[in-house]
Amino acid sequence: MSVPVSPDIQHSDIQHPGIELRRVKTNGTELNVATAGQGPAVLLLHGFPQTWQMWIPVMAELAQRYRVIAPDLRGFGASAREADGYDAITLAADAEGLLEALGETSVAVVGIDIGVPPAFLLAMRRQDLVRRLVLMESLLGQLPGAEGEEFLTADPPWWFGFHSVPGLAESVLPGHEEIYVDWFLDRGTSGRGIRPDIREAIVRGYTGSEALRCAFSVYRARPLTARQIQEAVNSTRLTIPTMVIGANPVGRALELQVRPHADDVEGHVLTDCGHIIPLDRPDALLTLLRPFLSTDGR
Image 1 (tube, one colour):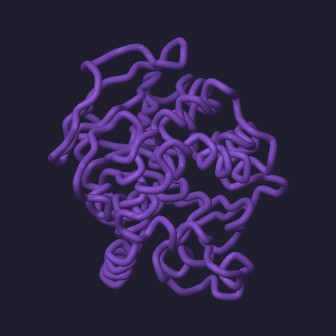
Image 2 (tube, rainbow, N blue to C red):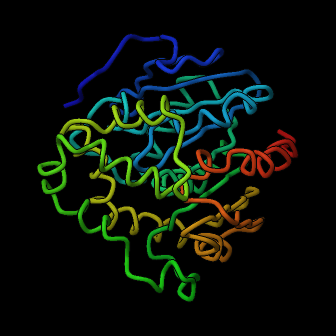
């Protein structure tokens, strides 16, 4: 059962001219979606612990040339809380249905962290729809290629195990969500922190046991997502232009996973940049996105 939130179209709760929020029904759920600008569509898929607001530092510039579409993923932020459907294929189907509902037939997809697997699978499944793909700071299941990278030789992040135990994290964290989310936001920006209004909006999106359960369900679906990714690369090759951007801690690990399965890949690593690239180094990210998106001929 889903829990709907808010009216159909409204202004952003963080006051930014040109950004609108709307409710969009797709794939059996209802997503909270921020849109801005006009032109070729660019879909932005957030990570953990983030909501669509993580893209605010880059949305205004992108919206000068593109129609920017930034949803809260299923169960996250102000999107409907769902009992299941947190594997990458379902999240990719949510995104595909969202684009159809908005009338988009061609899109550049940008995913970070937990937004990477659905972005990748959407592109693999719909190369007629996705014209360009940008992947940042994540891993793609158990795909080989990055075994020698420092990110994979260290111990797995402690929160992967904590989040993966059904019912545990969401039963002990209520009342402490702000402290918990702040730890990730601080670490993900190399201690530089983020704007208070964006921080407060993200914390709200992770407050309460149901919000936490939904967020952690993505981690609990990781084994299924890994199988889905493996099945996809076993049967399909990625032919669309793809850019992979690493920072701290992932570095080149994701690029090394993607290269064997894609025809057209460019890779970059941002130095002195934390995991949450759009919040930590938005100018550096835009420097990469501008030429990559503008060379799109469709």
